[in-house]
Image (tube, rainbow, N blue to C red):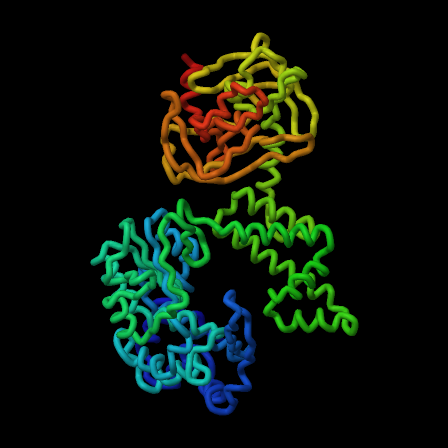
Length: 564
């Protein structure tokens, strides 16, 4: 029976290892079984090799261990993770750290430098792995270090595909991380590393020449940076060195970091297109299209599709593709958050397409029911005035919108996106309070069954909002019957003013017709009213003015005005 050890006990045993028997003991396997793996079986019989395409058209070789060896390597990787003292700059393959956190370190910088280490895994050979564990801080016995290297290496190097390779690369790179962190601090820049992706960023107009410099338009690695990399036996892949200022798209480990850390638009478009294809053609046929485009690295799935006329494995292929989509949508969740409307929308679509509860989206349904019940399209009923905006119910107050959505005493219909009209309002009959300067209006008694103490969104706190805070904007831009609401999670970019009124600008786009819509915080409480985006054919409409600013009015200004 295998006895479970605490992390403290495991770490103590690790630092005491001297022999092969000690390695077998900490792995909790018999020494004869370990000897069998090390000496009786040929390494080539324990690995499957295949290639996967890179973005540049080249191929990356993967060496995947068989089930039994992978089990031993996973045990070893868990032990090494306990012994490894994580460096602050290291983000790849580290518990409680993510690709998002790595990129977020470099957000809103004037300059970003990306460096890729050439042939990262194959640069770490058997001798380096053995030497790593024989030297401080580990100081293991030569035989123990040799056995660890034998378990971890294939054909003399760390194989991509083995569970032990990521943690060993981090251990190998510990001195590199320390030295580059010191170099970064000395030059007042930020440094992080995600596996073989090294990133520096700064608020300066240019990087110090110790790191990088331009000569006749060509990028050159600075002498101090190059010295440290060579000292640690790494070589820069000059084809992947990128120097980006904030006038162009800045990317760190595949994420955009100019104003806030976000996914590339291309990624969202790809997921949307795949889901659309699945809806129209079905999961299996969509999987075939995906595979035939060369995007599948699973040889078993490729074989199933190539031989579909001989063996019916449609269920296996469909299940595989559902997991692919689950991973892609899960990545949106990782980067944007589990309450992000884009994630929730795509998660719901996958659940419907697959007829399975792949994602728990109960909160999504609850949120959208709240939107359907409390956000409306406001349209002028006069044939001579083409005007449309948005409005929402605020609990204890009434129907909120922008002043410029209803600037006259015409009748305005209040309807849901289904086309159902819930009421008709006009200034003379329903207006409670308004302000041209603040640009808001509050209407009451919009329908017979409206109870302002029960219906509507809860009031939030907008008094402490600041640049960088996430908000959700919801409205009906360019509305046509049957359109769903525009829901967008974005960031506050600035606090400014418009004709003396406090105004927050945002990273999201506000289209015509969204004006008067609601701005929510992440608790789904109201923090503002969308300003900018009224749809009108009137030539003198202020939203056509080039000086008209788009953003939102903080709700606390509105409430204070209504209470006075």
